[in-house]
Image 1 (cartoon, rainbow, N blue to C red):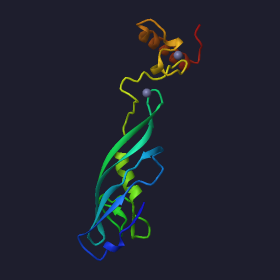
Image 2 (image 1 turned 90 degrees about the horizontal axis):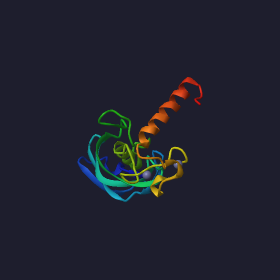
Image 3 (image 1 turned 135 degrees about the vertical axis):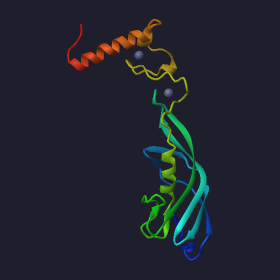
Length: 176
Ligand SMILES: [Zn+2]
Ligand SMILES: [Zn+2]
């Protein structure tokens, strides 16, 4: 979403409050399920140095790390950045969210930067998700599949089988 801020250029400490929302359909490959509008405060400090602030949230679609089911996850973010529109860099000298016309801001990029910092490391559809059976691929949340019907203590057995398989793969031999 493009915001023209050239009207602020002649004034110092002048502020613009803009309703914005993320307009891209995807963010870092994740489908955007919800991108509610929030208020972005843009202040021209002086000499085309701007301050951006605001708080919002975005809901993205992820896949559960264990069973691959779609999980919608809301990510709150808070914007508080300074940037120079002439140099097109932020306070750390990084190139940022301005359009090459030197007059406008790309609010999508501004939002994206914050969301990327807050992306979850791990997504589960629920804390105790049982995942998929590694053998037949069945969703174990819907009940046990044939191959998972091993006796208690099966975890150790599974670990042994896996270790065997791995060593077979590594040595290129097949076990009997
Ligand atoms: Zn799951
Ligand atoms: Zn199975």
